[in-house]
Image (spheres, protein in one colour):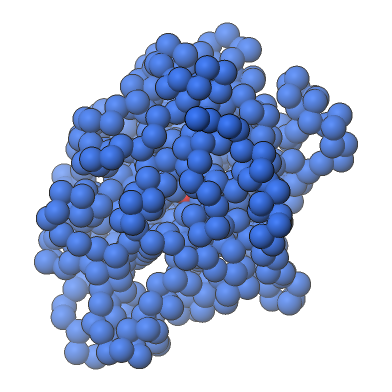
Length: 457
Ligand SMILES: *Cc1c(COP(=O)(O)O)cnc(C)c1O
């Protein structure tokens, strides 16, 4: 092959690691809509959020104008244990596809939690510790966030209480044990530990839970326990801010070799990895300095961008959280069982929602079996066994590279490889045994779940 000499893996040096996170909102003319108090429908003030969230994180959440937040030294030191993460040129994949496209992926699976979630977990644990808190509560679906947070909490000596969606708790005992290894307590949700859990169990006996429901439990536990706050692993602005390290490193590595991407692709659950990966590129786009195609990839079973509505909605099933304006399927939407647990959320980051609404990014949805075909193909060719969530981005990147083959375009494609799939082998097994389904919600189902949206006007 006659390709220019770019290393297989571009590693930045430690001293080239970003010293500050980049806040994409600072460059948005039309800012994301503010969180609203569900009672008064007025924008949430810092004081109203302080019973639930850590103070410094609230400041980051509400700040639409500061472009850079310095990364505290303690967090930077932790990052150094597993960052900078490699930006990999997928030479083998390119060759296999016989595409003129250049494909790169930013690999975030190089840490024990196995995903990018550790980037924000360590920041959130740090600010909780600095505030003098005893511990934090959270929910986890597939388990990656809970795992990342337990690692972060054990590093800073904080207590960590995780409400894990019951079906995952039962199906993913290994993730649960990793969390306990790092000292977290893990409770299957819904549980009898909280009022909201009891209520949900009374209404739906035998339910195996949902993310929205576990959020309600974790929030209730935080506000009713002295010295605790609640933390969330995606969706929020602060999480996108911390994840900007992914994009900043990617851009620094590309700049080092003079490479300019044409298309940037990421899977989208709550939007944190995608928001982080695209941050500096979208910043250039917003400032009119460069142009990129940016593509969010979501599961056809939970299509918030492609089939949702842009409206204020609750972030949780129990309706205790603030209202967020976002692309949503309705907080009562229960997606069909999907093996990409990290993408089964009814809503989307308000920042990405606003950017999508302004036409600054695109979205596509892909079916589960197509995703696992891409996952297996990628594993065999590039060696890494990808997480089902990440494989959504792989699917879209392969499709794009195949289109380039047809048109002869030498595009440069970057995608986010958010994590590894070692704890998802039951899902891979279902795929191999031909037992995987591609359930897609009907228009009627989506209309019904959106009919319950709160009235905000
Ligand atoms: C949680 C998760 C996602 C999806 O979450 P975002 O907030 O949309 O990034 C994607 N990939 C992996 C591996 C995850 O753990």
